[in-house]
Length: 70
Image (cartoon, rainbow, N blue to C red; front, side):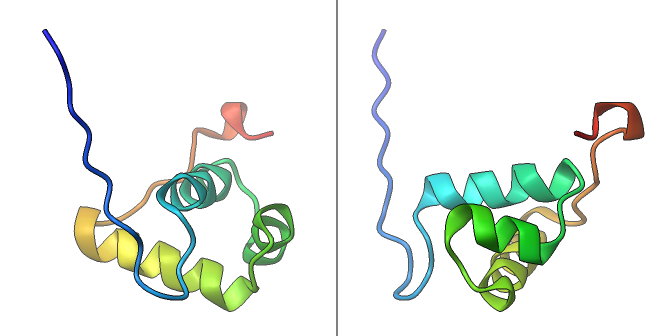
């Protein structure tokens, strides 16, 4: 069995798919936009835009369980 992954380029001005996944994971872990932006080298407004686009595609994002945070 083989799996073929096709990952398109993100829209101009947006981070790579792996950074986008990291943004979502950090947000779910309880980090705020400023902290996430500092970790992935993005402006906090861009972090907010990525999270908004993810919400459009997947619905509401839920933070991690409080015991799992940090």
